[in-house]
Image (cartoon, rainbow over all chains, first blue to last red; front, top):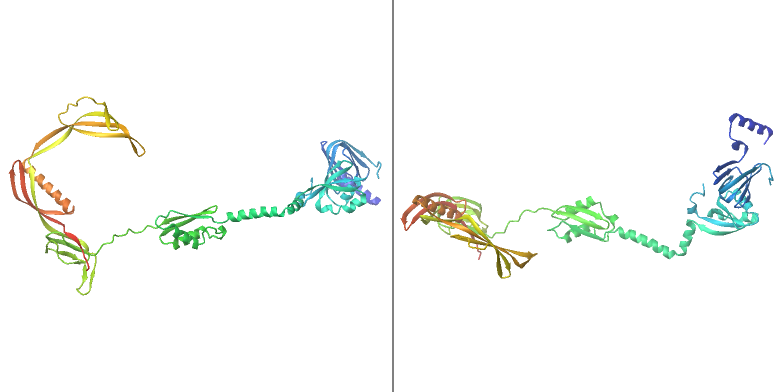
Length: 97
Length: 393
């Protein structure tokens, strides 16, 4: 993306007041209690066990810790996790593979 | 969305994937556009569900990522069909049973006829068979019930209405029979002859040839209405019918006593009740003499009975009713009136109630031994016709 394009985006965003995930490929994370978690715009699974789930993002890593984690479904860039979720950690540009 | 739509119909499998990098495999699968669900860590790998259609495109991905998999469970219709195919004769049996049940239940099994008294059931069943209603006929091949009832009514003579009613596999034909005119009794050929000597006053021949005319004298046995039509050569015999009246003289000898005795109940009575055991009767109530001068006794047994059996056990009531005899003296005038009344009622009883007494004449009257003796001549117009069968030799 060119610099002008990026600036145009930033400007449009400022003028139109659009949500960030639509324009800037940021993940949208929906958490329902501590039972269900929906993540859109992820970039793949890095690690998956029943205690921990690490997801790659455009920028950074999302680390979900809990118990009895199950990926209910994966559909393209959407992912639903159920289980008992205790911790969600967002690491921006950490150890991005 | 938990799983893809109709997944149980399309069939899906549960896989257990092991390998150094299960996550990469999952990413690869997702990247290839394959839907997976219920991914859960199990042992050193992960178990996941995916559709049967996608299963065969999994192999290159596995090779790429160096994972191994084996199928732990199969769900859905395709697998069920495959399993059923192993027992195809059993499945065929189930199918044949279902089809047989359907076919047998769409057949007529019994036809009944109700409401007929004169027309035989077989005739109606035969007509119904011609209209296509008979056992082992397909129900869907039968015509509509209103059409059937119309055609059956026209097919069976003497039917006013026929109704078809189907309950399951049995058909009831409800019929109403037409009312027929009353049949006249058959009569043999006959003449009408005179029963007695008379003078004809009225003759009306309904059938046959009147031989005598009004005011003609007839003797006993004379033909009044002839049953023979035509001349001597061409004769046809019919049943003579008609009405002939004539004047007839009857002579009555009457004797009327001048004293009339009668009896009447006074209303006094005495009841006795008996217990009946077989042939013996034991009096229960009403002991003692009634003290009546003259009496009449009525006995009413009242036996116990069970259904049609009469038991030899019961009650008997005896009623003793006091009677009073009366004697009434008649004047000769009254005696005569009574005698005439008696004679007239005798005429009406003997010669028909439509007889008319034209005149009466007392020929002779005398009083002797407490009685009135009379000789009366009645002139009566009465029916004089009598049937005489014609015998052909």
